[in-house]
Every structure is written in C-alpha cells, then in structure tokens.
Image (cartoon, rainbow, N blue to C red; front, side, top):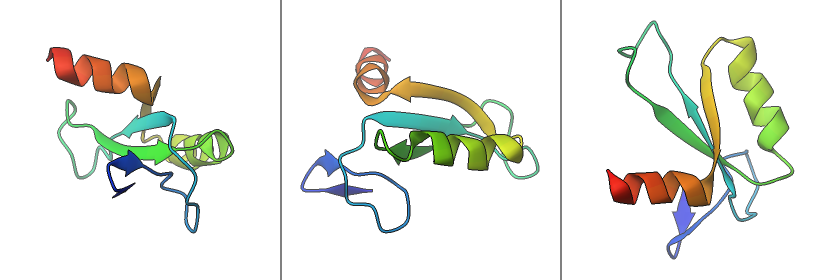
Length: 74
C-alpha cells in the first residue's frame, strides 16, 4: 500500500513508512516461484513475519531499499 509514492506498512491501521518487504507465497494458491509482498515498518516486521511464518508462507525478508534496487536491476 502506498501514499503519494511513499510505501507504508501493511499492518492493519499502521501508517508508518515501510522499510521491509516480506515476500511470501501460499503454496495452495500460488506457483512455487510466485512472490506476493507485504510491507512492514520496524515495529511490525516481526509480527507480520511470525504471522506468515506460522502458516509456512514466508519466503524472505528484505530491506525495502534492497528490494527496489534488485527490481530496478531486473
């Protein structure tokens, strides 16, 4: 979710700037290479990671800056 080009955290009700990308995949719905993403601020990174991890969905946690850099290179 973004506001005026500034990415914000995906946690419910949070309006803080996002600094992390949580890449995930639901194997019952998505092909193995597909990656969905949630954005997280520092405060919600661990909570969102645990939510996805418990379900076996979490694939990677990457700094937003690095994620954007790799997307620009690709």
